[in-house]
Image (cartoon, rainbow, N blue to C red; front, side, top):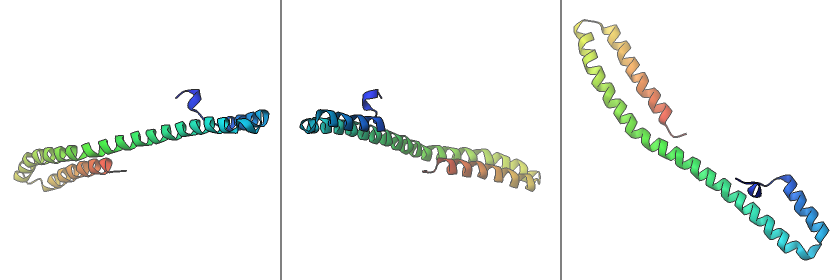
Length: 115
């Protein structure tokens, strides 16, 4: 963004001072020039908002595939762990392991949700 695209209170004051100096015959040119700067500023801000929204949308769209992959990996990891702990009678350890895997999946799903 260059200086020409920025709008500030001093820019408005300068346009009004110029109008007072030049008189009413240059009103149309002053208004057109100021309106162009306002339009550029609005377009720039709108483009920034669209870019932010697109980044959010793409991040959320990719989260579904990551969540599926995490769920599959969690199941694949839990099966041998549950067999080993179940055979050895370690049911408390089995519940703690299951709670940890569920917590990881819930945390990922919570983090990936649409803001």
